[in-house]
Image (cartoon, rainbow, N blue to C red):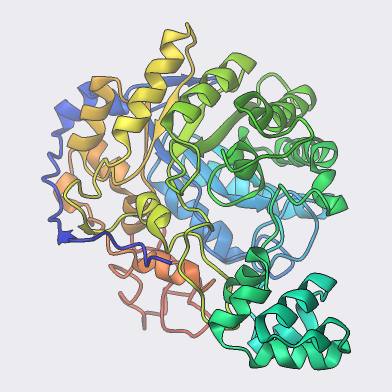
Length: 493
């Protein structure tokens, strides 16, 4: 598999920021209000969902997690989206959860902290996610002795490979030992493609595994789970929810062209969109009219055989027609082309070519990382408008200067500008721009230091500030190893 780095890559300098004066910012479209369903954002600035790995192993809110979101809120973006939050009450590591009422007190405290830190200016949404099982890459000896399910096909193929018909009736223990002793090339002749993948990358469930009862029943189960999670979000005080239909996870997999389910939930654009629409309707039916319901999905999957911008435009029109309050677009970030993990580690969806497209660095191809997704977003937004629909479209991807953001809005590429990595580098950057203090902004270096931490489920920080004043007694929140601060310097850090 590819490492994700483009061929003939070059290092791109940070673009000229074009920071506005106080007067220019006051006139800027970026800082003008925008309607998002039943609410109005004070500006078109948006901090998208980022998983910071600050929840407990039980998925509970922690003081460090509250400090993380309060710090972003202090920069007073128009909207702030809380990280991908699991809708099931199942073990999932230090990932935030909303699958049970016991999570409500912590989530309520988080909402209250954001309200206080932003002076009530920032609208707060929470991203709701479902995911299927992804196992760690196993030791070959463990895989062949414990995980591989032996059937007659393995016996027949091994007998044909070796020319020894006795393997057709050999006992299972000897058969497993023989398979382990084969060369990599020989194993590939005996194992199925999915079995080889499980050996090389770790077993990964797909929405097309209809032989698995829990996968086959996803259309019956997921609408209710998403709806219950949305009700909890509303009870905790969130302004709305963002349905996670993007990247490597369950709902995105239903939208993928690779979804060939034969039960009416795949195999065609209408079939692939069926469950996402049913989930949305289930959510909309249980929350109040004043609660925002939007979705994040992919403008392009990037992977071989995956969905392209034409598919995304169709989905966008139909989702808008169904009544979603916003459409937030991303790109890539799939398991299908990810780099092979080390033994004992899980495959990570941002390491292959689709991962690079999702989070490109300054080391990129000739197009570069800044505003890379805007042509796709523009095409999708135009399709929505051409259908006579008015739903705000959120763009992201290297939009880390005033000039990039403002130009995208003025051209009509998007209605709202989202920035994750730049907001992490300086949570106050929106406010500094609005006040004409652009020269004070700490600019993201676009090296993906933060993404490297995320890959290993370490608390996400930024290299530009995580060692600053580390020994100060005022820095009370530190990483598990004590070597990094967890809150960016500034008014609340």
